[in-house]
View 1 (cartoon, rainbow, N blue to C red):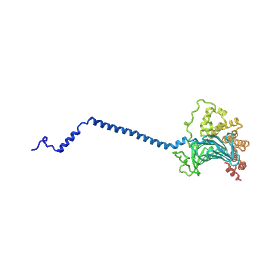
View 2: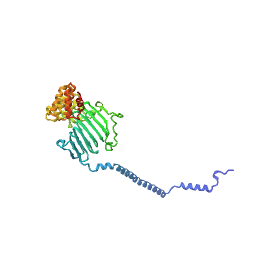
View 3: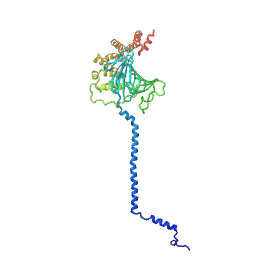
View 4: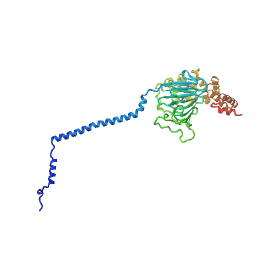
Length: 438
C-alpha cells in the first residue's frame, strides 16, 4: 500500500531546501534597504562625474585637431602684410609723366619691382605704367612687344593691357605683341596661366603654359596653337582643386582655329541696366575703352544710339570716339566709323588720335569710297606722320592698292621704299614678291 503524499517522510535534504526558501522570502530590514539604496546612489554619482570629463576630453581633442589643420591658414592671415609693390629699378630708360617709359638706348627698357616681378619693352615699343597699387600694377602696351615675368603670389593683382585686350595674371612668364596697324594681338605663355579678354575673344580665354594665342581683328579670327613651354606649370600656377580647361582642339595635331562667331561672348544678363532717361553720351566711370576691352561691342553701339548719334559725336571724349570708330569698323558699319573718325579730327585736331584717324579713314574708304580716296588718305597720313605707328601699314596698303588696280610699276616702286624702311614689316613678303617681277 502506498503512503499518502502528506505522510511522506521528510529527508534532511528536503528540510534544507525548505529552510533556504523560507529565508529568501523574509522581508529586508530598513537598515539593509538604506544600505542598498546608498550603494546605488554612489554608483550613479560616480558615473555622472566621469561622463563630463570624457566629453570634455573629446571636445578638447577635436579642437586641438582643428587648430593644427588651420594653423597654416591662420598664420598667413595674421602674419605681417606683404610689402607694398614699388618700382625698384629701371634699366635702359626712364619713367615720364603719365607713366610712359622713354627708352634711352637701342636695347629696350626693363622695369624691375621690389618683389621680383619685371618686364621688358622691346626696342621701339610704346608702353607705360598705368597704375601702381599696393598689391600689384596695371601696365599698358600701346604698340610693340614686351616680355613679362610675374612673381607668383595669390595676394597680388597684375594686369596688362595690349591695345584693346586685357591680360589678367597671377604668376606667369609670357610674351605679348600688339600691332595697331594690322590690328593683330599675339601672346605666348611660357609658364603659368593667364586670362585674355577683349574683342573677338569676348568674356575671356584661359591659356595654359605652352600655348600661343593670335587674334586678327580685321578677320575676326582667333587662333590658339601649342608651343614648347619653358617650364611645366607648377603648384603656384593653378589654384588648388581647380581642373585645367580642356584643350582647344582635342586630339588634333594642327592649330585650333576658333571663329569668333562660335565663341560665347559675355552674357547679356551681366550688363547693368540702362539708364531710364536718354542723355548725351555719358558712359559709366570706366568709359567705353573698358567695354571695348571686354568685347562688348554691341553694348557700346546701343549706348551711343540711346544717347543719340549726333549728340554722341559732339560730346564723347577723344578715347570714346576712337572706341566707337573701332566698334563700328568691326561691325562693318562704315558710315558710323567714318563719322566718328571725322569727329575725332574736327574736335581734337592736335591729338595723336587725330593723326591715327587719317589712316583709319583710309581703311574705311577701301570698303566704300574706292582705292583713289583711300590712297589719298594714306598719302596724307605719311606726309603728316612719316614715322607714326601706322606708317608701315599706310605704305603697305598703298602698294597693294596700286598693284590691284593696274599700276604694277608704281607698286614696285612703293615696294622698294617699303623694304628700305620696313624690311621686317607685315607687308615685307608681298613687297619682295613685287620687286622680283620683271
